[in-house]
Length: 145
Image 1 (cartoon, rainbow, N blue to C red):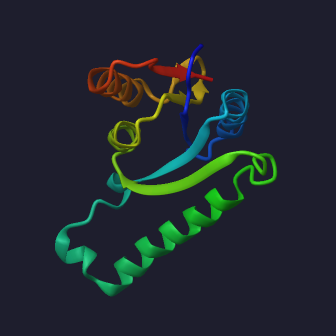
Image 2 (image 1 turned 60 degrees about the vertical axis):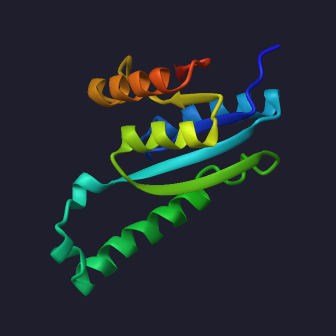
C-alpha cells in the first residue's frame, strides 16, 4: 500500500490555493499523514543589500510582512483542518528552491501544487521545483491539483 506520511502543500494565497489545500487535506486524512502548509515569502520582491537590510525602517517592514503572512497562514482553512495533523510554516527565499529544500529536509512523501490554466505555477518555477525534487530523492514525485 502507498505510504504518504508527510504531505507538503505550498500555499501562495491565490484563488486556487484553497482547492489544492483541500485536496491535500483529503489525502492527509485518508493516509493518516502529517499535512504541512508552507508559504515562502519571495525574497526577490524585497531584494535588499546588507546595508539596506540593517535600516530599522526596512527591517520593520520585512518583519511586518512576515507577521502578516503568519496570521494569514494561521487562518487559512483553519476550521476545515481541525481534525488533521497540520503544520503551518512561513519561510523566506526563492519559492521553488525553498519548497524543494524543505521537502528534502522534512522527507516529504508528496508535494501537491495548485494548477494555473493547466500549468503548475509558472513554467520556470514548476520545472525547477520538479527537477530539483526528482534529482534530490527517488520518490513518488509531485502532483498538480
